[in-house]
Image 1: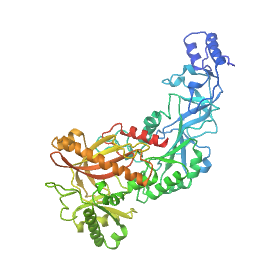
Image 2: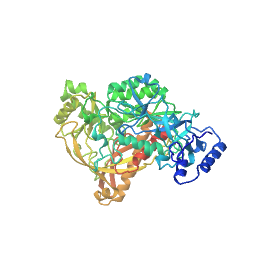
Image 3: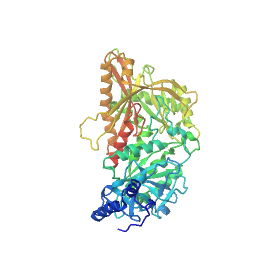
Length: 572
């Protein structure tokens, strides 16, 4: 070992432990001797994938080539992200790496025992390799000079990480609503919504960094994370066209995409209210292209499942199955509405009536009509909905054939909407909703009952449809079990019956998802509408499938629990 001579008044060229010794008045010779002895004794084992400081020699001199773990939050102003070396291949994709191992050089000697994870001044000082191109998410050059890093490992480590993750995220104009955490019953909670910067940062901090297979010790990082920014449907088609190249850029033994965008049937618009919404054919086309080259869609679901769940078409196709406990529903095509809306409305009501008679709900003596009193003499009242829409925005009610005709025209002629159909569904009388959160195992045992991980309830108030399609609103409130029981006159027998009925119905609904995709969903939320009929009696109707990432209401640990399920699925 060679040490550059330093005068007693000069400490800058010394590693941190020697600076401390000098500052404390200890002898340089003794301190240097300790370092030299430990360095002579040090072995140089090959580090397993992801291992870092814990397996390094006791001392590394200035100029040593190492690998360092780079971690950056793209949401932070000026955060340095790495443009992959194969950037020429991605000339039409804004593809950056935020987490992973990179080559660098120590800018001062480093004694591993001197490092304090809570004191950045004791961390290794590393200069990234000149081959690394550091940019912020706006494509501006980022700081490329020496920096303190927490984790380093031997330069010779060539092991591939266990998992490569790509966050496919919004890269257009950022809208404030994505991070809104307003304290109300309809909020997204402290993590925000899935497309938000805060949500994805939490997936890393409370999901990836807490997973035992990806971070098995304080020093181990067995993953890499990329950020793929898209700002339009056209950019999403570029992702589809570049899927093969994208897969080659990932080093992980397993590779997965987290699709942090929402599909919609709208032409692209600059309206901030539609930030993060991508035309559905482009989104699902990109997902399928990536899946075809081996990139698993780990969040929210594989393309086929995700498209089916969010289309809402199952509201009609499953309504003919008595075990689904769905209100009658039918799909009305845009062509029918454009050509003859009056006839389209009449046919829709006739279809609902036919489906209801095929699959009648059980009504015992003394019980009210099902699913509603309004339709006991024939279907007249219901709702018109669009698929690929959220938060109760594109839902309109009708009370007769003439109003249904008007609603169909309103819904099918919204400027910018490219939907080819809408859903017409009969009305349901209910007191409040019960939401069941399921985390099915990777392999379902035939005949085994799947129990919900969590149950939450909510209630809806009066609807306000004055603004027309897209601006409909309704009062929304969370309900604790105690509040739900208060609404049901403390009828615990009816409450227990409702929970059991919802859980039993869920078995068919989860099984149906297996019929359309043989791989069980890592997570699904099933919403039910509940009606108390009298002492000890409750009626339950299925309302909606909700994809992974849907709102968890009062379940504070819901999002981290769901992220673990998604990562477990990615690692299968």
